[in-house]
Length: 111
Image (cartoon, rainbow, N blue to C red; front, side, top):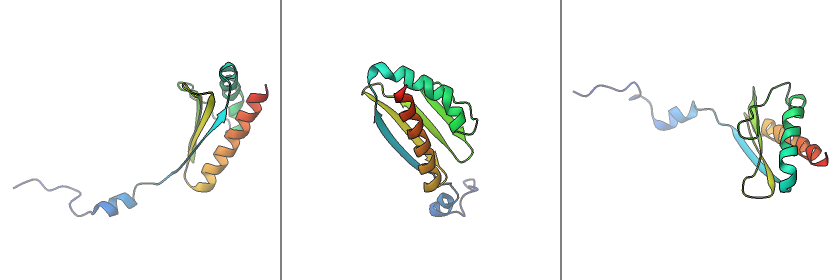
């Protein structure tokens, strides 16, 4: 006899209902090659104020891990853009994270 699975009483749709669903948004903002490093530097230095004191991870741009989601702002390696990607528990949270990130990028482009 084959061993019984602990999941044999569950249907896939039942299991999927237990997996949290997050909203993912992304945008790209024009950024000349000569500005990319100063933009990311500004975001790393100033982003803590925008994202509730969270210190960003800086492996691939600036990533802010928050309680209700995350934000990644990084320069494109292939195009003259800075990219922002956010994930939030719901649409309102994701939109708020995106708006704050876009504001931060626009401020950085002015410096």
